[in-house]
Length: 89
Image (cartoon, rainbow, N blue to C red; front, side):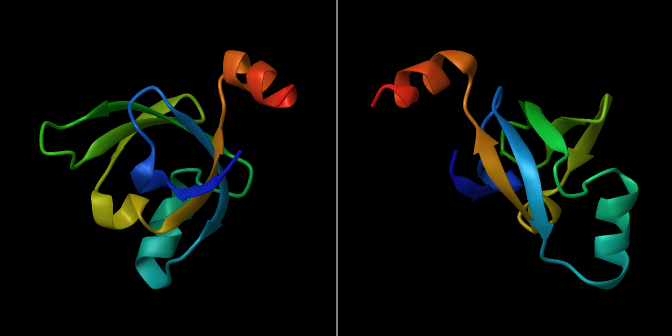
């Protein structure tokens, strides 16, 4: 696993939330939609321009703008096949 921002994961990739770098109303909104430590978020779709992206979070599809998803620090989760390859490296 490697540390990244939710903004940086591509379509089909999953990341586990580590922390939020936001205050006030933005932080409250991110927490309200379920982006708490340990939550998995999978990028399902991205607009042709890349903004916004749609994420599967706790069973709900939520669109996040780049400025909001860039505030979410996360650990990228490797697919099972890549985990097996890296385990032997």
